[in-house]
Amino acid sequence: RPPRSTLFPYTTLFRSMLIFDRDAQPRGGDIVLALYDGNITVKRLRIVDGRPELHPENAAARYKVICPKSTEQFEIEGVLRGLCRRYS
Image 1 (spheres, rainbow, N blue to C red):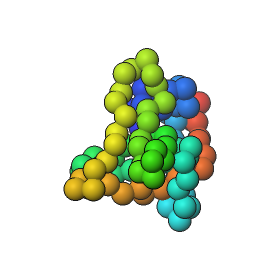
Image 2 (cartoon, rainbow, N blue to C red; image 1 turned 120 degrees about the vertical axis):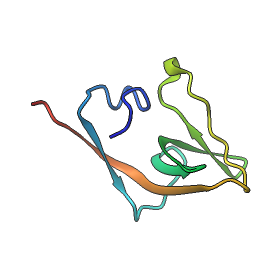
Image 3 (cartoon, rainbow, N blue to C red; image 1 turned 45 degrees about the horizontal axis):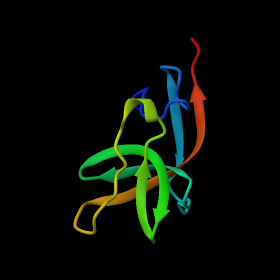
């Protein structure tokens, strides 16, 4: 379960659970689960000049775009395929 503000407006309810496909080939525009510099993050994947960038969905929170360097640990673990919400 990601922090509520990370993917707003996709996870506007506290009990949202994201479903990732670990076998899917990530493409530009996909929301991905990524391991970056020892941390797990969920962001939109963009390909800029052939290099991956991870963009936040919540512009109001002022999260920074992640531009992994070749020397940094970076791996896409899965592509978002679904969202489940629990109401009770």
